[in-house]
Length: 385
Image (cartoon, rainbow, N blue to C red; front, top):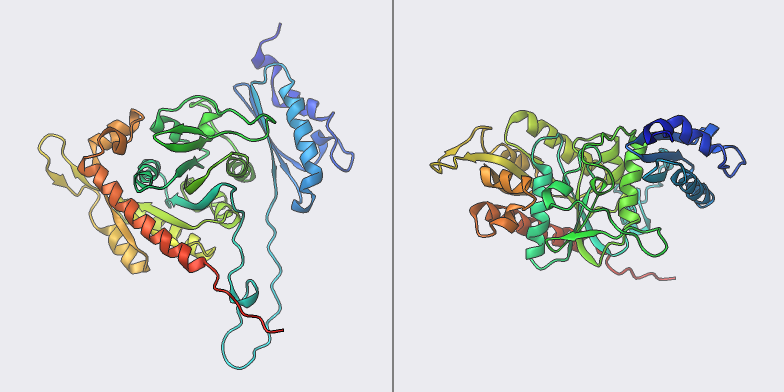
């Protein structure tokens, strides 16, 4: 018998997809809609790019393709996702001016148009983002989620960093998620009183994720919509680093209540943080605040403080941009050691000064979230016919 490696290849997958027909009757294997096939370690990922208006017709194709691929020898799991390239909406004709003032786009009555999908079972979604990698965004996300839990909220954590998922390591959770009886919805894993989901629960830790932008967004979308979340007060989303297409699409397509920007104090990181703030503001996502991570180094031997990356840069940048400054987190050995061990500092040492720093940030996030939520509530309108 041939080995799984020899049996399973992209060509084998495409040959199987020749038996699956698109709504137009064309073999999926030669359809231009098939925009990506990735085969790695017995796991197969497909991306089908469609017109959103035809999503219902293509859902049957997606299911057929997934079942066909799962039946192949050597396939441990298969994920087939429907994606769509967002088309730029045509410019609206200029509104007639009545008196002085400016015409505004959006919903009737001057209300902003909805930003994106809501997630069943989740009251509010907040994004934890950074303009660049390596600033401690994931460590901030897990500790922020736990600190919000300690404030009495029901909290979930979605690891949307597809290329470098960290939540499995940070939470010490490694098992695969189960599905509902119909097999269509995943059940989030749980630890520390949090509901958890990550692409890292579905693939091996050392598997490289070589995906195009639409495949990344589709995977994130499925982890939002095809997971039985809730009931949650807040879902914290650990965003991919940067301000590229995946991040912008996420901000546009998901109804985010706000964003937390993580930066370190040095100038280069602050430039990227500035881009992150600008990206969210461009798509009308409120900035809940900026966190200065690795604000200073605390010597584990003498307790002395060193500002090895500078100090106060993120605070000054937040003031300059007119957004809240949520607090600073030290660069401390205990935070790093406990994160690597799957025991965040708020779990392993909840009474430490480092844990208190995260709680301070969480208090600011909750206050900003409450304020943003209150501002988005629509006042009643009296309409005279």
